Every structure is written in C-alpha cells, then in structure tokens.
Length: 315
Length: 289
Image 1 (cartoon, rainbow over the protein chains, first blue to last red):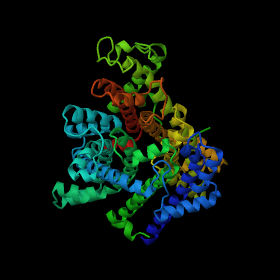
Image 2 (image 1 turned 45 degrees about the horizontal axis):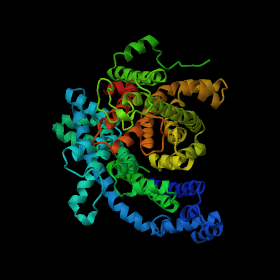
Image 3 (image 1 turned 30 degrees about the vertical axis):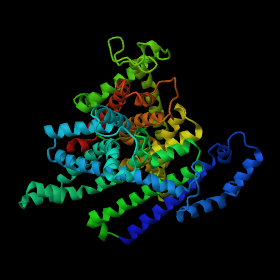
C-alpha cells in the first residue's frame, strides 16, 4: 500500500516538473517580445532594452526557469504585463468565479449521472434504459457552448429567469452571484453527466454479473440494498477514473463557457492573456491548471485504495 | 504470410448481415453517410453562394427560399452549414490520421519492447494528459496563429497519446498468444510481428477509437473556431457561425440553432457508428447488452 502511494506520488511530482519545463519552453518560443508589446510600436530600441532588463528577460534561460519555478512554489507569480498587478491577485480574484463554477458543475453532473446510471443498469434492455441511454447518447454529442447558447435563449432571453451573462461579484450577495453561475454550470455539467451516466451503467452491469451479487441476492438481501451496497461500491473505480478525467475537461470547458457568459473567471483570464501575449499570466495559470489536474488524478488514485480494500493489503 | 489461426474467421457477408441488424450501427452509418454526402455535394452545388453577401436579405427567418434562414450578411445558413461540414470533417479526420500515424507505432513499439522504453513512453503519455486538451490547443493555435491547419495540429497532438494507449493495451493482450510464439520461432523480428500479426488483431479496437476521436475532433474544432482560432472567415465553419450567432440570439435564433444541430447530428452519428462497430465485433460487449 505505502509503496503504491509513494510510486503514485513520485510520478505526480515528476509529471509536474516535466510539465513546468514544457510550459516554460513553449512560451519561450512564442513569437512577440513582451517588452515591445507593452511599450507599443513607437518605443525606441533603448526603451525596449531597458524594460527587458527590468522584467528579467535578458537573464540566462536556466536561471529564469529556476527563478520562475521558485516563484511558483512561494506563490509569487510575478506581475501581469497588461494589468500591472501581481498575478496572484488576479488568480485569486478569478478563482472565486471559476472554482465554484467547476465544483457546482461537477456536483450537478454526479448527482444526475449516478442515479441515471443505477436506474439504467437495473432496468437493462427495458424501455426506461433505452430512453435514458438514448438521452445520454444525445448529451455526449452536444457541444457545451452551443447548449449554453440554447440555455441563454430559453432561460435568459425568453423566460427572463436568470441573467444572460456577466457576474455581479460575490459582494453583491450570494444569491445573485449563484444565479449568474447557474446556467454556465448546467451547460458544463450536462455533457459530462451524459458520459458519466454511460460509464456508471456499464460498470454496474459488469459488476451485477458477478457471483457475489447472486450470493447477496440468494441470502435474501433486497435488490435495492444489493444495488447500493454491493454493486455501486464495486463499480466505483471506473466511475472515479472518469470523474478525475472530467475535472480536466471541466477546467478546459470553463475557457469556452466563461467566454460565452462573459464570466470573469480563470478560463477567460488565460484566454485573454494568450491573445494579449501576457506570458507571465499564461505561464502561471497554465501551471496552476496542470497542477490541479495532476493533484486530482493523484486523489483519484488514492481514493481507489479507500473504495477497494483489496488494494490496501496488496503490496 | 500472416497467421490468424485463433481468430474465428467470420465471413464478410455474415458480419455485414449482423451489422445491418444492429440499430446503432445502421443509424450511425446512415447519419455519417448523409453528412459526408452533404460535404461532398457542397463542392459542386449549394442552394446559394456562401461568398456572396446580400444585405437586403439579412437575418431572415427560415422560409421556403431559405430553409435554415439567413445570417447577418444575408448568407443562406443551409449553404453555410453544408460548406462548414467540409472544414469540420477535414480537420477532425486529419487529426485522427496524425494521432493514429504516430500513436499506434509508439504504442505497438512500447508493447513489443516493454521495460524501460514502455515505462518512458507511458510517463510521456501522463505528461500530455496532464494538460487540459483545449487549453493546449488554444496555446498551440496562439503560437502558430489561428487557422484550419494549426487547428488540425493542435487536435492531432492530443490524439497521439490516446491511440498510443489503446494500441499498447491491445498489443499487450496479443503478445502472449501462441501464434506470436510461432512467428517468433519462425525467426521474425518484433517489428515484423507487430506489423503482420499484432496490428491486424487490434485493428477493430483502433477503428472504434478512431470514430470516437473523430467525433471528439469535430467538437474540438467547433470549440476552437468558436473562439476564433479555427478556420478563418470567409471560409464558413460551424463554430464560427455559432460565435456570430451569439450576439444576435434575440433577433435571429436560427443562426445558432442550425449550425449547432449540424454538430450534434454529426457527433451523434459517429458515436453511434463507433458503438455499433464495437458491438458487432466484440463478443464481450454484445453479451453485456
């Protein structure tokens, strides 16, 4: 068990270090001199050179890499070129939008998908299963940003129940803020829920064919108890794996969804930073997202051990 | 000469008969065929010229003259959806080609060699998977500039580890079989065995994964062009049409409805096709349904 955990941890750390090198290298080859972009086309070569020195752009490459990673570790991400504020402040502000959004979406998707998967698996081949899986098949095919547009049309333009976009900020009160996150969260969650429901169903069906399920039924346990206590728990590993993968999709999904709803979140920040060549922001946010993905996948690996006691005793 | 001794040889005719009894396959097959036909026809004929702007006809609701309505430049949406299909299909298909062309040899090589080579390739896979695909695609298109070709590269790169993984897993299951041992005894190299015996046996797996990645590629391309990073105007693309529609939702909702439906139908068709193929050719999944 300890060996398994240590191995997963070592892989996660190694992946993170490699990822940081990749991000750094990629942004090095990005065309466009940030100093030149900040000063505009009319600036003299001397001015640009001065600013390059100030920004530390003329230092040797390995030194700059170490400086950057050292900064990341101490949460000092540097200053944004375009906003002229510390990146960490930008990130903190934007995270207050993106993190609740992603979490609500993840919760929604799980709350929809697990019951649908359970329902379908226990009614395999019957009309209810066919309808549910047909809906899931459709849900997988829907691009979330188009679904978002349709939601805006129905709930914001037509019924006027929620705002069509924008974010009032948490200072405007919890309810108005939550209201403006509702449609984006639904748009993000539904396609994910469709995938998750399919995975849950097929994992459950595989488990329901096992001998111990027959034993549990034979000793007189009601079907519901068998489904929830025995089958669902054993079907959790593929479900957890997909949930972990979906977290990465959700993070990336926020880039588009936040653009659709004009939400001042992390995804919109990184998208704008890329188009504005605000490298320091891009580097930091991308690393943050990658670290989040790696951390979640590590958590999923660890949760296998919690769900499956067999993994705990295995060396 | 190739050996397939332990695969039950099914007649092509019987597979075909089975295929056309499978609802998912039939539905997926005909939807995919329809979309492909639409793209091909668009080269020869569209109801209207998509490059001609007719401001007098702008944002007209669907009618007999314009089945899907017109956009803010008076262009016929149906014609644009038809031409847009070319772009989506081309980008997604070439991206699958890149993924297969590089990923499959890598995966097969990892499975054949094992040990350190295998470990290194799989860790490289982990690395790529750590980057949310869309985020990296945005970065790639930002570096090389927006456009269909760079969208292909951006999506293709993320298909590589997917195919590498599938090919490796499939190949690992084939390697311990007797006919591989026989081929080894006959003095074939591991490259030869991989090509002649392993690949034919994992072809179905790759085909199923191919249709899934094709569908994902269509979605990814739509996302990139929605953000303005895919095919550039005046070339119509489904994602770009949705972007143009967004600010005009109140006056012209059809501008958003039809391109979106085109994406949904295409992706649905490909997913059904993939499910159908998996069903027909994999006895295990057939038993489970």
